[in-house]
Length: 383
Ligand code: NZQ
Ligand code: ZN
Image (tube, rainbow, N blue to C red; front, side, top):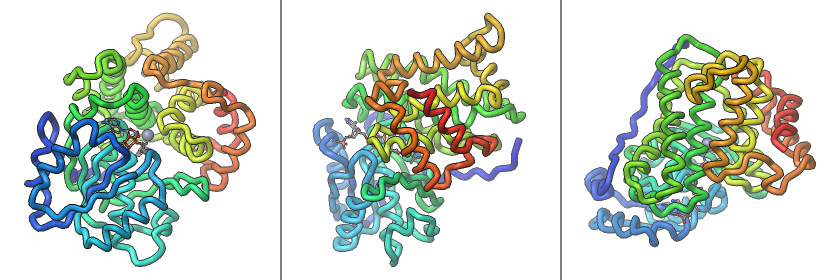
């Protein structure tokens, strides 16, 4: 196992009714910037619960952080927070609102052009933030990462800082009952792919991390379709919510090799063609596994046996069956697995490759050997 340091400081309040704890967790006297997306929090009763729990605090509400949060929108939120002298941020929503709020938290403490924070300048300070999660998918509720879209540059820019872990996160599975089917599918696929990217590389003498990953994958496979069939099954939603948090809170990836190529190629597809984040992953991952079957052979066989219980046939047949099963699962979750299902054809490939080059994404994967030629082959397989 490789050396690692692990410290996840986010306190989690999990379960029904936990939004009421907000008032006790936010430091008394705080001036709170509450951030959210479109209208969902008003329709599903989440806002009413937050408003009640925040009684007594000075609150400034910023609405309209869009899916794939946009730099220009977030800069407006920074201006509002400065005007209102906010010193605590509460994000209510999914990954986009939480990521966007992390950026706001850092930009509020930065004197220069906030774009610097997305192009390499280290984040040295941030306003404290917390969140109420309403969509289980990204793990942003208890990790230090964010991704912000710059529309004019057609870029999705990742950033990260230990200062951006939410101070606390409220995870009430009931808040997810109102998700449309498309977002249920997206959430399950995103958590599944986060797990795969920290697991399906090569054996690394880390049997606990392997079994932990396999447990997450099997739980997502079992519970995901149930959420589509019965959106108000609390137990199912609770299990999915906890899986999604665990899939990207840092624990799973401790001491093991990782391969984030699917995400890096996927981010370019979202920036260029506006596919949902998880839609890009469902397209890229099966193609990547097929293309990388030699480098990932031992782990693909382990995945086939332990996750999909595939024990018959020769090794290549079992690997083929595992990749097909992965694709079938994404389809069952209602998420398409080819570019053509999104109306995209081979003409997009040169554009995606040019973006990967521009962003220095030319040596991806656990072996740093996914160069532009390999990415091209992956995209060809994804058509
Ligand atoms: O804006 P509203 O009206 O709230 O609607 C949202 C939004 O349109 C809706 N929604 C959220 N909760 C709902 C709900 N609708 C009904 N009921 C609810 N309870 O869902 C739509 C999508 O929300 P969004 O936050 O965009 O989805 P998700 O959580 O999948 O986040 C995706 C973003 O996270 C980034 C992605 O790149 C993308 O920008 N990621 C962040 C990561 C991280 N911070 O670690 C890692 C991920 O790999 C990912 O890159
Ligand atoms: Zn993701």
